[in-house]
Image (cartoon, rainbow, N blue to C red; front, side):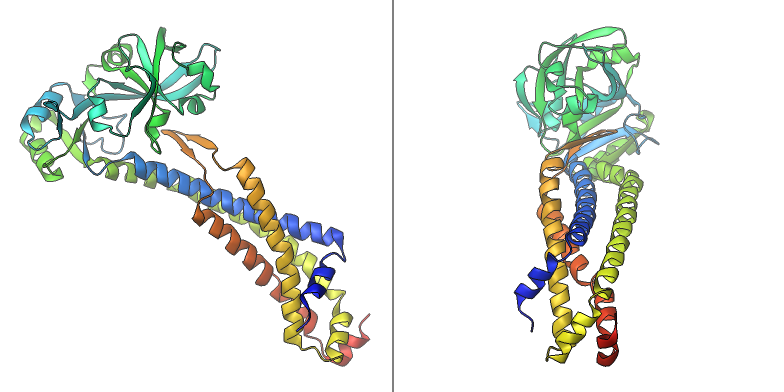
Length: 382
């Protein structure tokens, strides 16, 4: 086998080729890392947003979207008294009738963006157990409580929606009463109104949905209630199943991310192959000379792969550094909330495997072509 230092020295024979290889592999790895991180971030926030212990009652025929659902106000008290085995706190059943509405919100600076609004009463904290009040208090009349990532959804600085600031919805001004967290869920991007305020502002006398938290009860018990109360026209779905369906809805977006990353990566890969073909073609005589003094073609192939791996893994390291500063921890808004990009073990593993494959499989075609001519013919080559 050739010494490893031979591959290391050859790496710097052509600085421009080295820069192209390192840059091309860094681009490919960075794009794939970004695609995996984006898809994983969206999947994780949707899967974390739903609880298997929660059941959502929605209007029949509107199971695909809470925003389009309409539920009679009377259904909240009926569900609370008719369904046995619901979780209770201090004698209060964990039943929360809510209004969900998407509309533009304007900040004091005049910036206006779409936001997901949720009209709630304090009972909402009994079913949304991940919600933690960070500062301020629950919203009362004329007030709103914002998720800690709502500023990302609105595209403004965090200070613009701090407690005491004013948000404008329609022609009304609402004071920010507090900030809440709900780690890893879409709730963190929402703006919570007093339910009566939101009902008045949106001119509706129905709820969007009723969320129940189960204790001894099961989904079947809730479905029996919906069948018994045909007059209410309700459908029951587990909360985690609802958000899982939303993940299916966003599947085309995730597919487009993969397609874009694959197309750009393919362009960079073919460009790198052309560079390697040109570089190895000029070294045919060098390889033949090494064969003539006793080195086997397998040894030469391993040396060429070592040389390429050094370049592509350097590009992979560069891609990880860029991903750390440009992607890790960045929050990305989408229609129902935001999700956070993270360099998880799966993302890092994907990047490493990509770098190794670029340095091995991507090197084999030009290397085999370089070593394929017979020894006499290779020695006579220009």
